Length: 210
Length: 331
Image (cartoon, rainbow over all chains, first blue to last red):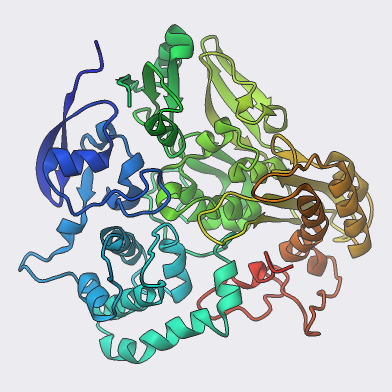
């Protein structure tokens, strides 16, 4: 078993430096749940299809079930546990998910929240279409998604200080996404142009800065 | 899952040395979005995994010039980086569309363009889009670098001309020249997180008269054992004025020449029919017809159909990309 021994990895989870003893076959998901003891992140399919295990690695949404744990060395990981504010209050996304009924059985919720967080960090005022693109990799078998889209819009409005407008527009915008303009909005998910307006990757010299 | 050794070289040469030394017992892994699934399911049982993530300088998207020209893509560049690149969207729209339509955002954030090419799936979106632009692969081997046109790289599903120990370093996309229009349409049964049932890319470069076709490429995904170009069809267009009739005739030839087959995702006859339908649609949506002075196509409702950036149709205000894909999958 030479070379197959476990290794200690050091990384930052929700702002705190942690270490975990992981095997070469361990995923970040397992390191978080079994190594660090944070069980908020869920395993659904284990194959990168459902998004229940979504966490942020250096601010970017990834499926932790397909992220080799050893690659977390030196990285900063944010899980659903890290959404709660320093004062103990829920994140606006969490509050909106509850308020809009975007949580039913709850299993997909941590992943949906983290994909939503990655989106809002990159694009503070996303359209319903942009929310659908960002959350296309988060399967929910309960809500039918409409409530999730509404919740993300409401949270964005809350965070942008335009909450009053959002309450009025929240369901309207979501309804139009599924109705009159639905064909256009939905179809573009497959080969979309300009779906996400802001770059998510830090650019270095000579690179495209979008 | 059986144990394996996890090797993390920090140079490309180091990775090549590890792979050369270990032979068939080792696999190279980039973003891991495909390979890790196979390892977790037990389908692959490598003795060693050589991670390419520690190698610096391969996650780059380098345009030749701010206002155009060619593009160099490092093999470890994630699809999301291409998706988010406004420069790529402006100068290589089909490439940006191919990368933006792959998997989910979570997959695109880690799945790499190099991995998509080397995995050699018949449905590889980035590879099918890159074939439109005559991309060249720069390959690092034990003896140094070599170059190979992307069009010669694929041998069959999962099979490439990469030799033992070789790794893809970067993809070079030459300047397609002025008056270039492109579009990639991924045809799927659902609109997100789906492998292509089939896909069609087109790229047209017009002469300065904005009428004569200088260069034409029609690439097809899942219409043969590998991503392919419809050589006979695209050659039919070159040197002649761009017309809808010419494109429809070429689309028919592309459909006839394809090697489509039945699979659970779609039947051969349907894939063949979709080539005939989607090649003209892709040209329409590339904006080439309008640029060539042809009237926009009329849709069933009698109004001008969407046609790329020049005739945006009626996109929703918050969805600039919607119009160009509005009829995709409709048929």
